[in-house]
Length: 350
Image (cartoon, rainbow, N blue to C red; front, side):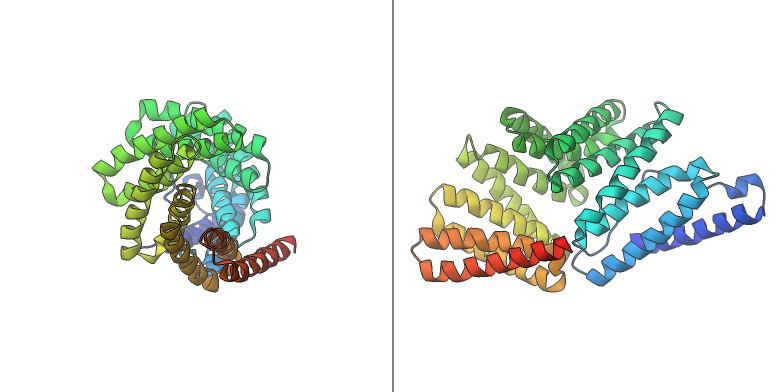
């Protein structure tokens, strides 16, 4: 059963609970939301705009149910907070990132209240950390770097304590938070701290991937991409090594499932940039062309989500072509990238 089906089932459960709550039917125990558990990642094809819209509508309806329930049943609050985090994610992948900020902020507010009511409860502390992580990423996308970093640092601090006591349950969450923290530190010019955070994240994911490859190889690949980026300023050869390993993992994953195509495209353009800096422009050219081809196909299915990424691949492709002396082709590609960027900016301004 996929997560969209689970959402629909929860929606039906929620409506049943709400109906009983409003009519006063049933015993008190029948009015309680189901026992709360750590949510599993949703599994919706981000290339499929119709699937994203369906998931968005289902999540909005489910959130309405739990918002009503939470007025009299505080046990529904974590469900609402998790639904708001999911809502922000769907907005983002639909190219509506400006709408993702409000639900992300509300999710943090809700989890702070829940943690105040249940101090020390790992499940709710984990939820608070998750909501802070999400809000930090949304702030970063909105150009609010200092606020983003503050939320991510708090998320890491909470999750590190949880992982010390329950590594089996929370170590992977810590690795994810550290990965994002490394990106935030790098943007804030705190490069040594960025490298340390990225290195710790990759080390954790590598250990987890050894024990459970199917679950954690994708996470390891993502952390290696970021670790390679963190090395660019100090050691290009090391950066290339991490980036090559990331591409290798994502290429294998993409053969088994199209869901990894966006990750492969991102890892390819990352490695291309490193090769360009090393003067390996012919290799960089092939990687840029492959990344652009993948992103072009993705943008055909979901332009709002993937046109900006396609523009970035085309921009680097044009730079490499200039380095190789093919200015005529480079100028055509630059014009396409500029048109895509302008269209994306116009759509975002609506």
